[in-house]
Image (cartoon, rainbow, N blue to C red; front, side):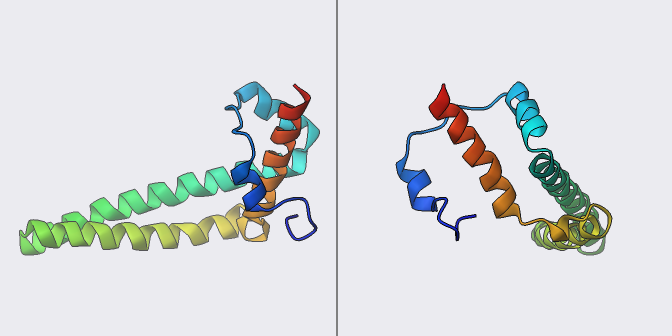
Length: 123
């Protein structure tokens, strides 16, 4: 973890730029670090779910506002509010069903980035 001295964000910002990883690299990481890979996949699924619920809620609320007001500004504001509400409600559902509440996203991401930096330095 960052608190234990493995690095800080300043170290990563000043270091060399990492090359893009491939699906094969992700498979290798999954084999070497199955728990961290599972956590990253759960977070990815959670993010996609939040975006989907936000988008669907945005369209639904905008449509409702439009039907009532016939005002494009009202529909746009409804869409913005609907997206925010849908996103935040959608964020709670994966916590219940995917267990994303127990995952520390910073640690999961750092596990991958540290592994990837090590692979880069070995190459």
